[in-house]
Image (cartoon, rainbow, N blue to C red):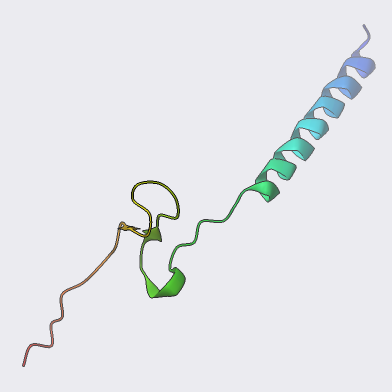
Length: 64
């Protein structure tokens, strides 16, 4: 096998892999963080449905 056919085949495989990774990246579902005013992720299915995970809250320093 000569050098050019190896390089062309290698380049072709890299481009195909890059194209497939791009398709997979676009097909991912976006996670709904900060939906409906929460500062965490709301579980949509399963036993913990409608439970907020990793809810960040801060205590008020305005205690008059």
